Length: 302
Ligand SMILES: [Zn+2]
Image 1: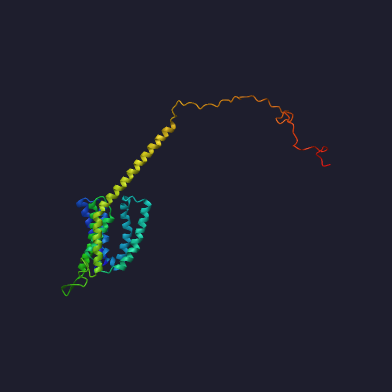
Image 2: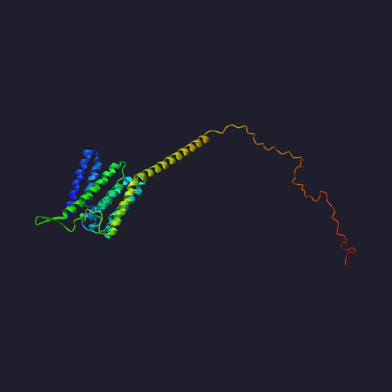
């Protein structure tokens, strides 16, 4: 089995050569070539994530935890995610990849299992395609291809290192055939790997349509908001004009003014010396009750 330095040196060399060929042979943008070379270099140690310990697992996960959220930033922006939300999502992604994925790998993988296989290389390429959002599908294929090449360089080196020479004769070690393979000994591992391949292939196939649809919906929402804003502005302006303009002089009959009420009869002038309850005015004689006789007359008891 090739060591870590052999893997990383080989994949880095392939990455640099591939980036130079893409730059000067096919006119691929500089930054894309640099990214592709770097990802090819890192991918050279991806299959050994199933080794559960050592430099490949630690460094690969640390790199993925930092690089994947950064590369996903473009997709988040296209999805219209607010800046603060993007930061939060990137922080969560870092923690999930750095610690959560490490636990999952230790729990569900075995060394030289399906992580060392052709389907695993396809999965790595498809995940890279989905993470690397770009308007040009060719550049997405190029970046994803760089990861697959780096991944495959590891598998090829492992197979080469499984060939030994003893007493002038070539022999194959027990590890031969465990790196470049389509399926392994574990049924569950095979099912899991090919399920991921099929699912990711479908998502890769649908992704451009999904993103286009998402952007169309965003554009429609933006246009609707703009038209509503314009209508509001029109209403506000018309209201301002109606407030500034004086009202038209309409021939409205003025409200009838209250007329002074003329008294129908003139009351006599008030005199404080004369009371309306004056007893001298029209005195009425008070007649005694019938049958009453004052004392001293026959009405007494004496
Ligand atoms: Zn390996």
